[in-house]
Length: 129
Length: 236
Image 1 (spheres, rainbow over the protein chains, first blue to last red):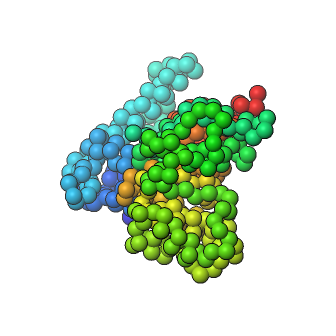
Image 2 (cartoon, rainbow over the protein chains, first blue to last red; image 1 turned 90 degrees about the horizontal axis):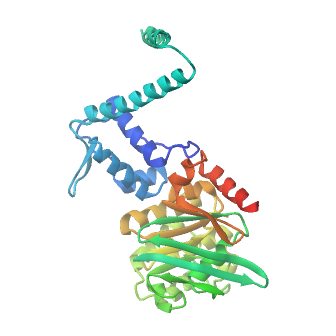
């Protein structure tokens, strides 16, 4: 599996690594108990500070997406899919809250917002079908 | 203990204050980037740290030792920007000579570095290109497995292959041994990729100091912007 980061992107590198691994889990490219590259290997592949990769792994471990096994390396957790869904749901919820705050500031009413939400979902699922 | 620390470190050249009250700490195992335009005082600061210059004021220490103590070289490696190695020696003779000065010299490590860095061993140092000269210096600086390495603009003058190999070697030093790195550069991308912590220098002063992520996200969208803003701010 190949990994990449975008230096020009303002997102901190450790977060880019976290996001990429969670996305790989969400789309099934990484499955439960799949091994992850060692900190050194991923740092070499991305040409970044190993401390940054170690920080990303620590963050993912806290979130329950990956786990370490002493002397064997780092693996995708059995409930990684659920953990990364939970994290993504949290991110989406924050986006909704931000949108609602902005809408309220622009004087958009609750029923107008319902309409906007419905239009957006309909468009999304129509495009998918 | 910090690998390297300075307190109010100051140095004048004539009336010009080239390094102006610089205070910083580099913990063991950290990768610290020193970012600044040419002439900002980075090289002078590094020379003060390793005892090649005496400060006018303030102090510095390397693993608790004063910079002028020869014992710092048991735990420190240095890659200079200027050409200071004896021009008449061959690269091989220079490696052998440095080995005689370093009881901790690791023969296997030296051979591996020479293989990875791929510079001509039998050519005279005076005939080495800038790129090959930097590669030789990296082999000299790391063959005794130092606990910290100070590099002054190591990637300038390297081609993309050499630059990638140097950064890969540093990644190995950090991940395998927890080597502390002080990397000075005017190339923002190198610092962004490699450093946990960065100090931005302008006209001898540290004008911004923090984690790369903090500098990137507080009032700037990239480290380059943060750098330009910090340097611009100190002009006013």
